[in-house]
View (cartoon, rainbow, N blue to C red):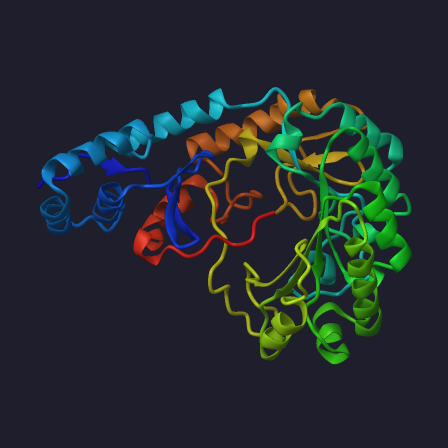
Length: 401
């Protein structure tokens, strides 16, 4: 059987509850039937196998395989060639461009006392932009400019490169978002989550709280996060938070996570035993892949999260001082799209810097040294890596933000 079509090189297979799913890179997730899954395996970019396609036809029948091919075309997963695929991707991205961007993250502060070796904020000299705290007036103006579907798209992530718990008006900021029907979430270090602050955040309506707990004793936690990460305070604060949440009418989802590192690998099982069997329905505990090189060994992540980048057509990150950057990977404001102290969110989104970024991604013209240079999520890099994402090696999707 000849290969009549080419699959999009932007597909990302993964598993959920054991079922094979395929993300098309543009926001749609498909659950392939058995014949469709067989076609996906045999037509996968860089791993095409004519013999396997013929074998699949013997198992499922020619009619079923032909129908699967038609369905994959209709779903935008298969094309006559790569050029047709790229034109379709361009049309889909431009057609889906919102009038104002969704917010990926809001940085309430970039102040952080932690010294995490895997974070640019904790690495001396890595981040040189000024530190500070977002003003309440700026936060309120920003909330007034949001896309009307922000709440459906994703909650407001009230963090970026800093410890949001240090913001003196944090509960008030959460309450402002809650009053507008906007769900909120953040990732924090429990050493700074006092019982009083935890209660205030729950009362303000915080929807989801990720607790970073990378060691279950004082030496391990301090070795990973620095001396400001006090195990005694972290444990005490976390227990107080869980007790408060257990008595709340609408407790937030609480995720207790340990990042997989060489320094704490000996504690994974004890971590799961302690925090993964609490019997509280609003609590999850899991060990998270670092998604980057281990600061001690230099080894890359075993299973890095890789997605087709759609940020230039979809969302932005707002820094504490009102500057807007393309994504969460811009730690030091290397590519500023605009400034909310002098522009509106819509003006920035349709301004020259944002348009130039979209053109660079669309045309594959990202210059050396550009923020996006070397990023595995970029379209060309993501496509080149397609052979490594074959359905037979699809893994369970990580816990999502």
